[in-house]
Length: 270
Image (tube, rainbow, N blue to C red):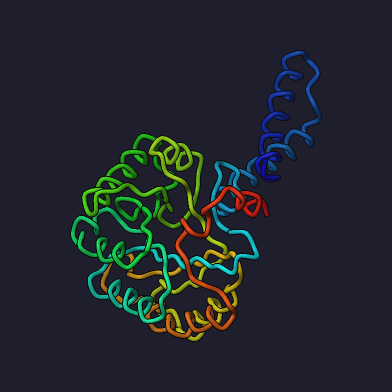
């Protein structure tokens, strides 16, 4: 069990013990109860914003070191122009990636998913819509959203995907339950290039991205803008990034390849 999950369960148990003692007329000191409540609140909040803590669910975010592999993942597509540019750059260097797609965009451009699959890339879900308040929604609403996105992918090329990365990447208890009900695995990241922000400077994006290029890493990039046709900074820096991957003796692979055996499970516990 991840340490953060154990600590959250421990503070929860402590709260029930305090209630039981209070019911018996042996209430714990107020300072102790406030400290426990504060610790629980901090852990529960951190669990949402830092999915790698794996409090609410298992989140795959790093592979085993030693296999000389890295996973490049692209969010917020597909887009007819920018996604094809990313696909072309990957093809030029013979590298593979995983694209986390938005259901609504898939229904508008299903041919792009077929192009991804034909080139040997993997596809994951990024929600049916890019809702920035995703982690606050109900389990029922989130499950329906994931299933709608999954249906769009299935309609595009006749197969389901195992991967899901929620919009913004936050993993609440509701997100974890919805992913389980929809039958998908949660994917996080080892590092973000922050290339999707409006006004992102390519030199800074490249520096961050190259600094994250290491064996077993999962790097978060974007092949499209969240809500318009703006080209993310990843398109400008991708050639240099791919050169950096090769220079470090690594191969860019899909998430399926990075986590192709159960041996990687131990690497998730950081």
